[in-house]
Length: 66
Image (tube, rainbow, N blue to C red; front, side):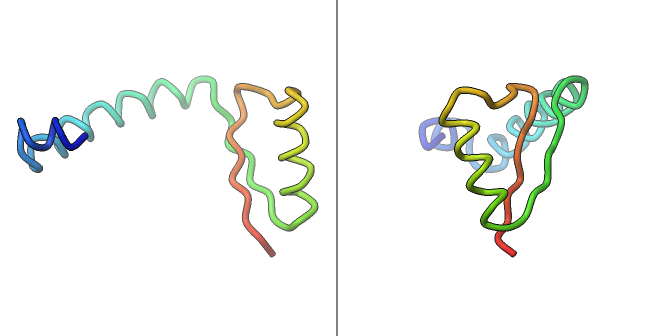
């Protein structure tokens, strides 16, 4: 990123990054499910699921403490 900012400048980097991010977000909406969970138990079970290789690739977890 530093190299790109150095060669394009911050404004152009921000513009290109925004275009790419919007493209990715539109594509990801088609297959990605956001899962919101709260609390230590949810954090632990999600971590163990990932650790065991049982996490679903089409789920993105947003975990927050209670």
